Length: 537
Image 1: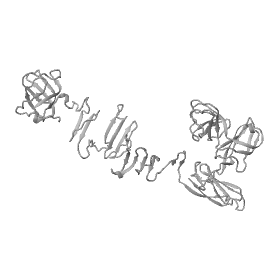
Image 2: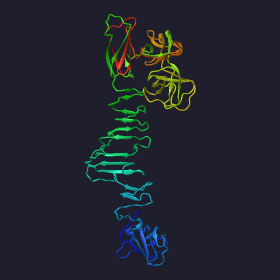
Image 3: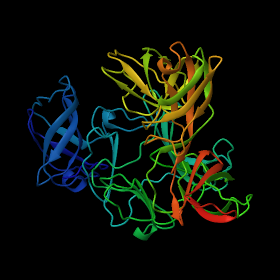
Image 4: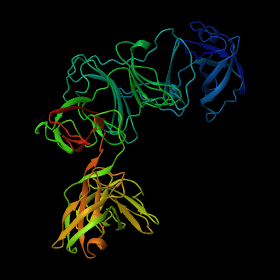
């Protein structure tokens, strides 16, 4: 069954009532419905009676003989647009083009289609299809080759492009639209230089552009230089969503980016999970220790600094692949002297790192210390109750914005102060060292300030790290004193060690660009000019 309209299709009929019409043949100069429309097909019809008050325009269906017309749908009629009850007499039945179903240009030359049905514009090319729901227009083809809807801008102007633009309900010519197009052969528009002459593009104006596959198990593929499988250059793998570059081999989600080739950072370097950034390659360097000393002068220990612009405080400095576990204090750095302590010489003073603090619920939170700490000291919190929201026990934070005995905490050195909220309970303790057991063999207080702190050779305690901050209880060196602290500057075995012939070597980077190398001999001596090789990774 097909819908057909043809010219000069007209027959007479004497049928009456509201039922089917039997067609009686075509007069001279006209063709019958069976030949002009075809059996079992549909068409538009008009029935006009010799009684001028009886007429009907509608949509009809021919039977298998092509001689009986069923009045399927009535559009207009003399019976208030309902089927007419035709009376006796001869009627003329002919194919028409109803005005309500016609397509015309208005006086301005505009073709406007207004309809409440699905897909009012339907084009069938060598095949008939069924319009999908909510379609404004439908196009159907049936060809064993590419089937296309083509639009070509024939202008060769510098601003010419061919575009398909889809606009949101609140969109305009300049906002909230998606543009899919191709530039002309001489395109050279200064406001859109992301694509050049003959370049294709797709972009979203004013909002996000989502590109992907909605069905699980399917890949998003990128290809270049051809349309074969071998031309694929990258894909987002199904299930894992890993980005694969130059390869189609996934590794079960353990590597979010996997490349078959070199991955290069031109600036910035590579950031690792611990927050460190590596900008230079692994390197090995030979250094000379003790070259300022005579080989005949015995030395118990010696340390020197070596400039290396590639060294950072997070660098791993390898002297030997077998690392020793140490962390005993070897030396203390410069200290804050404090005030109001009791003058005197104190022996075997325990150096502690824990202090009770109070924390405000504020933005940012203010920490009230009982012992002074230097900026960017790494600290950890414990509590007998609950910390405010924003702070977590046994997590490393950094002291920032020191002002007397008040400060803020940050997640990174010199970073943004942390905000707290909610409630808190219990007693909060702040710890500024990783180890325990440090003892100052001698501590001297003069005029209320600490003037000297001495630690025994190799120090005492275990588990310390470079930069840990220690202080002494004011109850030991003066109940009213405050403000004294001392950082750990050297560790026995602070790094990887090489031991040979009774010589122990360690190295670390306390300040970016400078490596400190410590050498200890027991019981012999270090001869000047001895060479060691370190690797910076």
